Figure 1 (tube, rainbow, N blue to C red):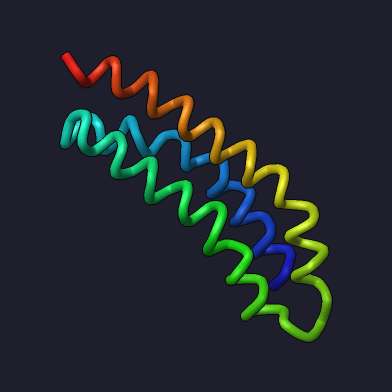
Figure 2 (figure 1 turned 90 degrees about the vertical axis):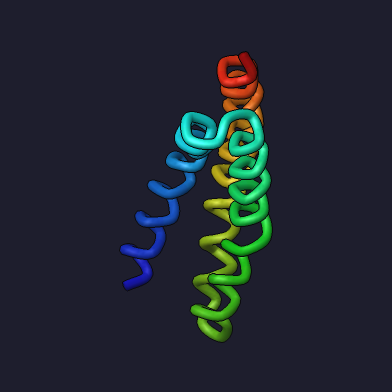
Length: 92
């Protein structure tokens, strides 16, 4: 189960930079920044809480956060960069 959760979170981390493009196409520039804020909050605030709840006593949550932390930070930065490019595309 833990391996499946780790794999899912890695895949989701790489999917977040696409969110500004999807919501930008639908709602324009407002959707770009709304989705970016939503994605960054999920990446940096809610994923560690998931491991605290799921693996509070076993210690695997700490290992997962240590392994996935850099991926989440890189994904958050890539999401903001992607949003900047999407904003200029949909602002016209």
